[in-house]
Length: 114
Image 1 (cartoon, rainbow, N blue to C red):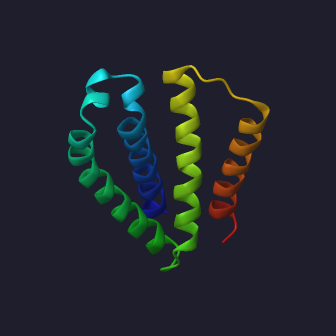
Image 2: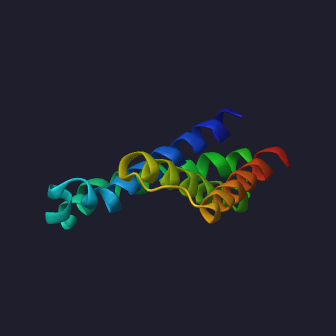
């Protein structure tokens, strides 16, 4: 269980960092002026996090990769929605709320259906 929790934490942190890497340009002028620097500074660390997150989740699921892929994708959707709502004040439409609900359902299926 420790591997699963740690893997999910790494996925959420990685997804959050990617959000800033790609969307920081809409908040911070420096990010907009320096996309190459942002990609070089953050890219390696984020990739490293995802490599280990995938490893930890796959170990929890006895080497199966599909659960980790679904968890990574769904945590990305949830993280994106939360950060975009909080930092860019983009509201949640009905379509977005349904999509978020499906993402949370995907995570629940992967965690509870073994």
